[in-house]
Image 1 (spheres, helix red, strand yellow):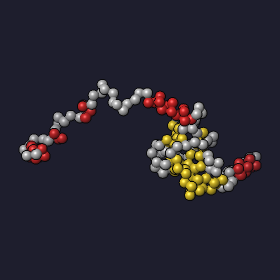
Image 2 (cartoon, rainbow, N blue to C red):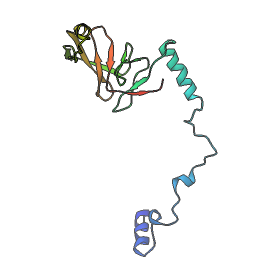
Image 3 (spheres, helix red, strand yellow):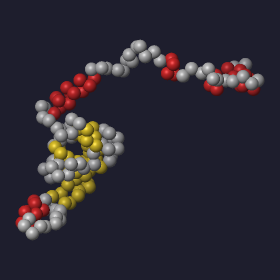
Image 4 (cartoon, rainbow, N blue to C red):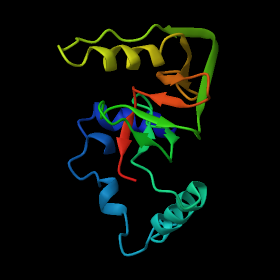
Length: 164
Protein backbone atom coordinates (compact mmCIF):
# COMPACT_ATOMS: atom_id res chain seq x y z
CA UNK A 1 0.00 0.00 0.00
CA UNK A 2 1.44 3.45 -0.91
CA UNK A 3 1.15 6.60 1.25
CA UNK A 4 -2.00 7.90 -0.47
CA UNK A 5 -3.74 4.58 -0.03
CA UNK A 6 -2.68 4.45 3.65
CA UNK A 7 -4.00 7.96 4.28
CA UNK A 8 -7.25 7.14 2.49
CA UNK A 9 -7.53 3.90 4.50
CA UNK A 10 -7.00 5.76 7.84
CA UNK A 11 -9.64 8.36 6.93
CA UNK A 12 -12.10 5.60 6.03
CA UNK A 13 -11.48 3.93 9.41
CA UNK A 14 -12.38 7.15 11.24
CA UNK A 15 -8.86 8.44 11.85
CA UNK A 16 -8.17 12.00 10.71
CA UNK A 17 -5.50 12.82 8.17
CA UNK A 18 -2.67 15.11 9.32
CA UNK A 19 -4.11 18.03 7.36
CA UNK A 20 -7.39 17.81 9.26
CA UNK A 21 -5.87 17.07 12.66
CA UNK A 22 -6.21 19.39 15.66
CA UNK A 23 -2.50 18.91 16.31
CA UNK A 24 -1.24 20.30 13.01
CA UNK A 25 1.71 22.61 13.67
CA UNK A 26 1.50 26.09 12.15
CA UNK A 27 4.34 27.34 9.97
CA UNK A 28 4.79 30.20 12.46
CA UNK A 29 5.55 27.69 15.21
CA UNK A 30 8.40 26.27 13.13
CA UNK A 31 10.15 29.60 12.45
CA UNK A 32 13.16 30.40 14.60
CA UNK A 33 12.97 34.18 15.10
CA UNK A 34 16.29 34.31 16.94
CA UNK A 35 18.13 33.89 13.61
CA UNK A 36 17.95 36.89 11.28
CA UNK A 37 16.84 35.97 7.76
CA UNK A 38 19.48 36.14 5.04
CA UNK A 39 17.46 38.62 2.99
CA UNK A 40 17.33 41.22 5.77
CA UNK A 41 19.83 44.07 5.63
CA UNK A 42 19.56 46.63 8.45
CA UNK A 43 21.75 49.10 6.53
CA UNK A 44 19.67 48.92 3.33
CA UNK A 45 17.75 52.16 4.01
CA UNK A 46 21.03 54.02 4.47
CA UNK A 47 22.40 52.54 1.24
CA UNK A 48 19.22 53.52 -0.63
CA UNK A 49 19.44 57.08 0.70
CA UNK A 50 23.04 57.40 -0.53
CA UNK A 51 21.99 56.06 -3.96
CA UNK A 52 19.12 58.58 -4.24
CA UNK A 53 21.34 61.50 -3.21
CA UNK A 54 23.91 60.42 -5.79
CA UNK A 55 21.24 60.28 -8.53
CA UNK A 56 19.93 63.75 -7.59
CA UNK A 57 23.39 65.30 -7.71
CA UNK A 58 22.89 67.21 -4.46
CA UNK A 59 19.60 68.82 -5.53
CA UNK A 60 16.54 68.69 -3.30
CA UNK A 61 13.14 67.51 -4.48
CA UNK A 62 9.59 68.28 -3.45
CA UNK A 63 8.66 64.57 -3.70
CA UNK A 64 9.49 61.16 -5.09
CA UNK A 65 6.82 60.27 -7.65
CA UNK A 66 5.38 56.79 -8.07
CA UNK A 67 2.92 55.19 -10.48
CA UNK A 68 -0.58 55.05 -8.95
CA UNK A 69 -1.25 51.57 -10.36
CA UNK A 70 1.96 49.60 -9.70
CA UNK A 71 3.91 51.96 -7.37
CA UNK A 72 6.96 51.94 -9.64
CA UNK A 73 9.28 54.92 -9.04
CA UNK A 74 8.95 57.46 -11.85
CA UNK A 75 10.89 60.49 -10.65
CA UNK A 76 13.38 61.28 -7.88
CA UNK A 77 13.78 65.01 -8.57
CA UNK A 78 10.71 67.19 -9.21
CA UNK A 79 9.01 70.48 -8.40
CA UNK A 80 5.44 70.77 -7.13
CA UNK A 81 3.12 73.06 -9.10
CA UNK A 82 2.52 76.38 -7.31
CA UNK A 83 -1.29 76.30 -7.59
CA UNK A 84 -2.18 72.69 -8.37
CA UNK A 85 -0.53 70.85 -5.49
CA UNK A 86 -1.24 67.42 -7.01
CA UNK A 87 0.80 68.25 -10.13
CA UNK A 88 4.58 68.11 -10.55
CA UNK A 89 7.14 68.91 -13.22
CA UNK A 90 10.50 67.29 -13.84
CA UNK A 91 13.35 67.06 -16.31
CA UNK A 92 14.77 63.64 -15.38
CA UNK A 93 12.56 60.58 -15.04
CA UNK A 94 12.84 56.78 -14.85
CA UNK A 95 10.46 54.02 -15.90
CA UNK A 96 8.48 56.33 -18.22
CA UNK A 97 7.47 55.81 -21.83
CA UNK A 98 6.55 58.68 -24.16
CA UNK A 99 3.64 57.89 -26.46
CA UNK A 100 4.96 59.68 -29.55
CA UNK A 101 1.88 58.88 -31.62
CA UNK A 102 -0.50 60.39 -29.02
CA UNK A 103 -0.16 64.17 -29.20
CA UNK A 104 -2.35 66.35 -27.01
CA UNK A 105 -2.87 69.96 -28.13
CA UNK A 106 -3.38 72.60 -25.46
CA UNK A 107 -5.31 75.64 -26.65
CA UNK A 108 -4.98 77.69 -23.48
CA UNK A 109 -7.30 77.83 -20.52
CA UNK A 110 -10.35 80.02 -20.32
CA UNK A 111 -10.30 81.92 -17.06
CA UNK A 112 -12.91 84.07 -15.44
CA UNK A 113 -11.95 87.67 -15.88
CA UNK A 114 -12.37 90.17 -13.11
CA UNK A 115 -12.97 93.84 -13.72
CA UNK A 116 -9.32 94.77 -13.19
CA UNK A 117 -7.52 91.52 -14.13
CA UNK A 118 -8.59 91.38 -17.78
CA UNK A 119 -5.22 92.07 -19.41
CA UNK A 120 -3.10 89.76 -17.28
CA UNK A 121 -5.47 86.83 -17.74
CA UNK A 122 -5.28 87.10 -21.51
CA UNK A 123 -1.48 87.32 -21.43
CA UNK A 124 -1.23 84.17 -19.28
CA UNK A 125 -3.59 82.24 -21.56
CA UNK A 126 -1.70 83.47 -24.62
CA UNK A 127 1.61 82.11 -23.34
CA UNK A 128 0.21 78.54 -23.45
CA UNK A 129 -1.44 78.96 -26.86
CA UNK A 130 -0.33 76.41 -29.41
CA UNK A 131 1.72 74.19 -27.09
CA UNK A 132 1.55 70.49 -27.80
CA UNK A 133 2.14 67.69 -25.34
CA UNK A 134 2.80 63.97 -25.70
CA UNK A 135 1.33 61.44 -23.29
CA UNK A 136 3.68 59.84 -20.75
CA UNK A 137 2.94 56.38 -19.35
CA UNK A 138 4.49 54.09 -16.75
CA UNK A 139 6.80 51.71 -18.62
CA UNK A 140 5.87 48.86 -16.27
CA UNK A 141 2.05 48.91 -16.37
CA UNK A 142 1.27 51.51 -19.14
CA UNK A 143 -0.83 53.75 -16.86
CA UNK A 144 -0.92 57.34 -18.12
CA UNK A 145 0.89 59.46 -15.53
CA UNK A 146 1.38 62.81 -17.29
CA UNK A 147 2.59 64.58 -20.41
CA UNK A 148 5.84 65.97 -21.83
CA UNK A 149 5.97 69.36 -23.52
CA UNK A 150 7.97 70.58 -26.52
CA UNK A 151 10.81 71.70 -24.22
CA UNK A 152 11.12 68.14 -22.82
CA UNK A 153 9.72 69.05 -19.41
CA UNK A 154 7.57 66.33 -17.88
CA UNK A 155 4.28 67.37 -16.27
CA UNK A 156 2.94 64.70 -13.89
CA UNK A 157 -0.70 64.77 -12.80
CA UNK A 158 -1.56 61.12 -12.13
CA UNK A 159 1.10 60.06 -9.60
CA UNK A 160 1.51 59.21 -5.94
CA UNK A 161 4.01 61.50 -4.24
CA UNK A 162 6.05 60.38 -1.25
CA UNK A 163 8.37 62.26 1.07
CA UNK A 164 11.76 62.92 -0.43
